[in-house]
Amino acid sequence: MMLKSILSCLLLGCFMFSGAAQTTSKEEYKDKYDRLVAKVGASGIGVETLIKHWLREYPNDVDALIGKFLYSYSKSQTSQVVGKTQKKYLGQEPVLTLADSLGTVTYYFEELFFNDILFKQAISDIDRVIRLYPDRIDLRFYKVAAYTGYEKESPIQAAAELTSIIDYNATQKPQWEHPEYVINDDYFFSAIQEYCIVYFKYATDDGYAAFYNLTKRVLDYYPKNTMFLNNMGSYYLVARKDEKEAVKYYNMVLKLKKDDTTAIRSCILICRNSKDVKGEKKYLEMLVKYGETDIEKQAAQVRMDYLNSL
Image 1 (cartoon, rainbow, N blue to C red):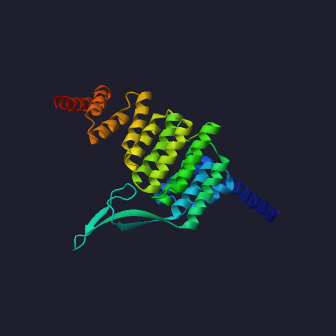
Image 2: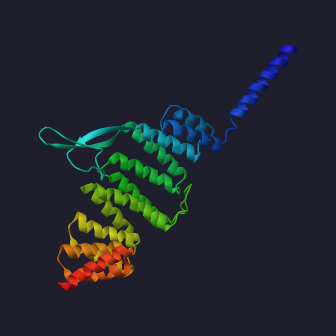
């Protein structure tokens, strides 16, 4: 009888322990995950095990699924310092510059390399989360960021993902969600613009192509967006060396927003390069009026006074 009682107590204890193991909340898992990653990184020791337990209890929890993606993406990467002949790589300055005995200079950059199998797993992981939470905009930008890192100077798939976000925003008009921010038009277009700037700074054919195609896609839907009209001016000015076409876009900006200093400064530069004194004075006058600082306004006035004295 006593043995039966002891066995009953043991079974009850096991049941209670099992039940307790299932009482870890999503928030508690998230807290454990954040503390662990802060110590060991997104793919450090113990992270994979924690995520597996987390997903076993909450298979569709968005934070656990993001953790799984970040684990695969981080695990896929290795970093190496690589010597190159160019002074900049992906818009970045070198971490080290050395010259050999003959005076040949080598520029060293920290570059990421990827394991293709693990990277594909990471994309599969983030795709699953996007299917479950299609209006979580941060998830879509996780995927763009992953492709941006993977493709380096040729952001073809990254640009395709951004294009799909632009299309989805314009055609479906989703109520975008974000765990930290309220998403409005300013946030949306600024986020797209951040990637445009990154690709523009690559100064590669594919980088410029991504910049142009994304800019054009936004303008197809939002033709009066001055941020992207300025982009188009910058594309023609820098990538195509077509000052006439660039000025056309900058003037479109100024018709919509007469105090847009980005467009005004660009037009001053173009007129100065082409020795168009009349045109330069026209835009300098605008900068005197709409310059962002007193110093900028004063400098524009000094330049205009000089041109008037010639």
